[in-house]
Length: 229
Length: 229
Image 1 (cartoon, rainbow over the protein chains, first blue to last red):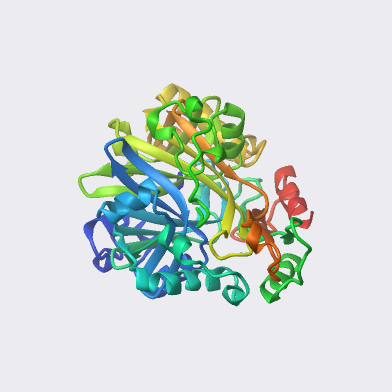
Image 2: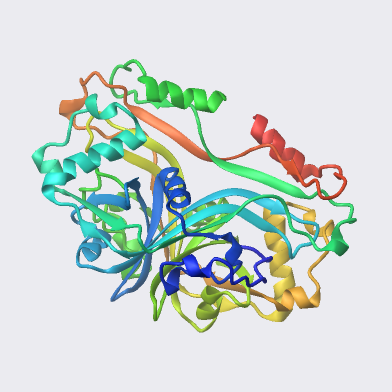
């Protein structure tokens, strides 16, 4: 993601689960352990799913959540992406968190801090009998306890929904952290250098006004507190 | 991106520049005007590029910036993605901003607020003579004025960098805003409903300690102020 990517480092190659998950550019940023992968996925609400059909390659954002060794997505039965995925299309699923802009003393060494996860494979359809439980887990991830407060999906709604999962077996994470890596000759340059950090942050909750407002549950209050803190 | 995507709306079809940019799921969320597209791209630091090769489909995050009717990316000459793109690979480039979690009164009607842009096409390589100016524009986008403070790229650094651009001609944006859309029968349910908004927010700048700290320029001070405000 950087002008600084002009370094090739063969480290960590042996840990890659496949040829296409072996990171070639700045391989020291690659990680193949489950804990790192899970942490990146569990912080995400959205992934990008790449797949191809007769019209070309597509890259579609969609909601996601992890349970165990799988990443889940869902949507309407009518979704082209889900239909192709159900037919066994090869996909690549990517989650990216942008953590900051890295301002170096030379233009070339500017970079970005980020954490990304790339998963290769094929989705499998979650069966009718497991669908409700898997969607409940998604709701728990978004808003703990809320699944007991809302109207649960009825048979018609569940039937209209496709839920799919992809195994995390063929995956790789890539992380850049820390400050700029400048050339020795540039260190005396009189320019501010450092990181402008970024984070996906909560803003104050907005209650729906289409009906009288109900008391905010714990996860909504916590959202406000995250904002103040 | 939602359980609520079970609606098919043929509106706006006529404005789609191609069959593959015609939004089929909830077409009322689709937009094809340049102003909407530019606003989404100009707020982005990162896009996801999907392409395929003999190993399958890939989805890679990379820095991006817009100038006029093109979106630009850059990287090391050694990047597999850039090499394939330079060979004329068909790509799909997607920018997504997640704006909030939409909590409805039924599980099925939960959704997310987002703005996404999807661009189809082929990248073209920016020629040597235009490369420096285009990278300057990127720096201006990130940190206005900084290009006059840092050491400019030398011939070797510029030669090691590939810059590419893709025309915005075949693109589509999709936007969801506002509160939950609940079924009439669910409106009396005693559950909090509304939006938990999200935004990519600045955190306080972190000066690099590898050399004595220099005075923060205007764009670094503005970053702090954005954080306080």
